[in-house]
Image (cartoon, rainbow, N blue to C red):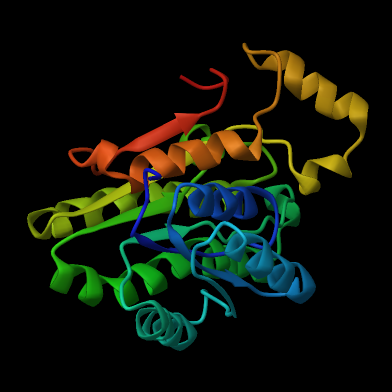
Length: 248
């Protein structure tokens, strides 16, 4: 019996990186997994088969969480297909880095839509189901940058800081219905996105972290298992930093 046996989870942006690691870890712990992907269709289909091999129900949905109606349709489809929704993980996110003086209005708006508005969309859509069940765990992926800021990432940092305020407010509103809402703030996590960067630059980042290494996607997934499971039933409105002490 896994820590998540019998629970149904919806994970956005799960075709690669941290989202993929969360989906695999959830399947290993016995959760039925619904997940979304947008551009990586082949990866999404491959992940569905990989998850099903753990003996759980898995289904991928091509959906854009930043679209209000699409998010509503997605949650309705998941509840219809799985019969429940116990855990919602908002992981979908993008970056459009640039110095503020060079940042376009489009790159600001795009980040706000994909990173922040998508959280509002999916949480709002999932609330009715969770309120009826009088239980649920919502996990929103923020970032160390949302807490401490970062030059060249004003748009990204603002969207991730917004997620923290949103998470705390949702926890206050839904606590009486036994629905928990927490955020996870990853530090420097090594994924496909960081593999394309210059090794010297990456090594410099590692050296600046007290634990002298980047995090693994699986280490974020472990935190998601904890917050999605019954091991954290009295934890809500919190930001769990997973960053090797780069920000304390």
